[in-house]
Image 1: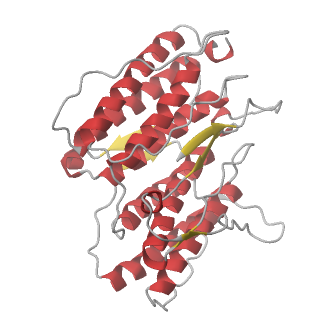
Image 2: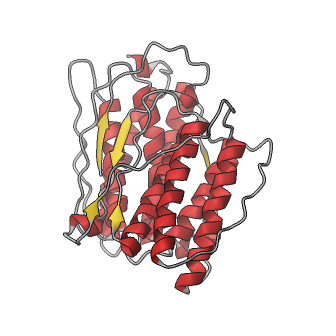
Image 3: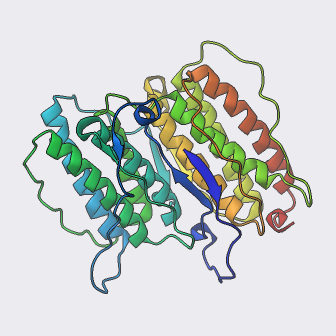
Length: 343
């Protein structure tokens, strides 16, 4: 995965800062491909939008997310996999930009499933340069559906789920929570499930964003040195640290007058958390920091985050120590100075 910034905000009047332009662009290479597994890269994913002049709403996206989950259930039955528990997290107060990031995670997992079963892969959709709208989220969900279709074809699954009716009044939060559930379900179908190395890479993207937020005029900041390595860490330890990072970012948003997501965690199940669950929370952390980065005029592009190779939870936990230090500095920078992003 690499991250690049597409520049400062355009001179567009924005009435909801939660839906401002995003500035991080991701490209995922399947670890199987990166390690030399045969497979020919295909063209970028085709992202289709609804035809005609119909306004796309979260209700349309939610309908397609339901279709994703129905397709995943057909694949699960064919593969003989057990059902999975519901997600450990729920969000409140989501905006389309955050839903888009989770939709990209869904695409990555669906693309890996297609690669494992059909041997083909495609480049993920890029994040739009302007404000995120439900139609763009829908396009990514439909791209994920195409990848699931490739896996189905390879598995000779001919059944087609019935289309769910469109439910009026659906909010982005409901869509995001549905995608989080789909992400967990798809991950359990993978031979190569999302692992600590994937989480490490996401954390590195977050560190790159935080570094640019800590820049001072004429001087680029560098991340602090990592803390001492604490051995024998497990995914629940990494998960808790990421949730703490998420809460730190929320405090930064509160100091800055910027609404951020609320994350609700099932504390009773944290000890059963899996690397894929950790990855999903890491992607939410990245989406919030990317949003803050996009609100800073003329912010320098974050440094690229490359595939780190094999990692274990202890490595990720240490990497999060760097991010925690950055977030503490950002809290101090934002406290008592709500306009710090314009400094």
